[in-house]
Image (cartoon, rainbow, N blue to C red; front, side, top):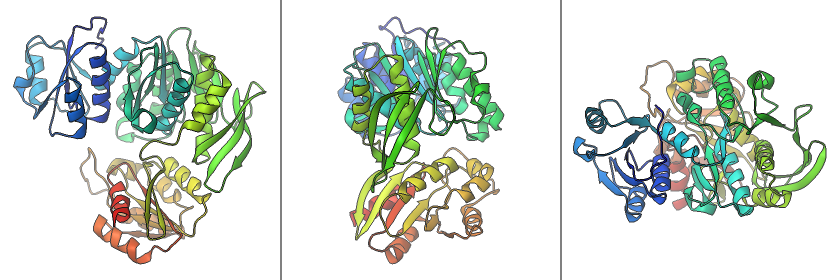
Length: 460
C-alpha cells in the first residue's frame, strides 16, 4: 500500500511504539509536526522518553486506543491480525501499514537518502556512514538498528535532505525503499524460513537495487559471489568495493592490524590513493564495511578528510564487539553475531587480540536458522579455544523437535574443538567462574539475551 506523507497534519498511530525501530520513526514524524500516538504492552525507558516529547502513549493494546480521524495505523511483524487495534482500525476503514512501508515513505521525503542492506554488517556500516555525514556537517536524519553512542540512541533527527537508514531484507522489507544510494554489503543464506533458498535472497537484493532512485548509485561488494548477476540490467551508477576481488573501484592496501585487533589501511579509489584510515574497532570484516561507507560518501563528493575522520570517530554500536568489563582477570565482550559468517568474522577479530584462551558462549537464534545452517555453524567456531552452546533462543518460532543445542555442540566437537552444551544461564555462569582464568577473553554471542551472562559476571 502506497501512502503519502506530504500533509504533516495527519494523525499516525503506532502499535508497538516502544520498539527500537518504531519509536525512532515516531520521533522523526513527531519532530516534523505530525500528530503521533501509540501503544505498547509495557512501560519502558523508551515509552517514557516518547511521552516527554509530547507523544500520547497508552500501555495495553485495546480497540479504544484507535481514535476516529486517525489517518494511518502502523504495526510491526510481531503484531498479529487479531490484535484489537488492528481489528478496530480495519473496522473504521483506516489504512493499516507495516513499519517498512512507513520507513519507505519517510525516506521519500529526503533527496539524499542512503539505505544500507546486506545479510551482515548493516548496523556497523550504517553507523560508519552516519559518522562521516555528521563529521562533514551535513546534519543528517539517521535511523540505525542499534544504539550509536555519538547520537545517544538509534535515531537522530536532522534538518537537511540527508537521510541514512538501515535496510533489512527479512520479509522483503527493504523493497519498500527507493533510496538515492543503495548499499549491498553481503548476500548469504539467511532467513530461510521466509526466503527458502539463496536464489530467492539474491533475487530480492536485485529488486532492491532496481528500486534505487533515478540518477542515484548502487554501492556493492565485488566479493559477493557472481555479483554481476545482482547488477545485471541496472540503470544506477555502480560503485564496487572489496579488497580481495580483482578490480573493485574502491579497495584497501597496506593493511595493518594492531595488538587490540583494530585495522589501519590505505583507501584507493580508481587506483588513486585517497586517504589512510585507522579504525577504532577490531575485525578484518570492518575494513570492508569501511570501504562501503567510503564509497557511499564519495557519491556525495564528501571530502576525504571527513571520511577518514568519521571512520576513526566510530567506536562501535551496542552489541557489536562491545566491551562489557572484567570479572577477575577475564575480559568480557558481547556481540550480536547469530549467523555462521558473523560468528566466524567475530572470532577471527578476537583472535588478533592479545589474550590467553578465547571463550565463546553462543546462544543460537531461532530453530529454523540453526537447523538450516547447522553444517556452517559447526565450522564457524574454529578460532575459539572453548565453546559453550546455550539453549536456542526461539524468538518468533516454536520448537518442532528437529534441532537442539546439544546437536550443534556435538557437531563442533566432531571437528576436534572443545565444545559443550549447557542449557541454562545460571549453570553457564557457574561453569565460567570455575574454569575461566586470568588473561582469558570471553565473548557472549547471539541475537537473543545471552548478553545477560556477561553483564551478570561483570557485576559480581
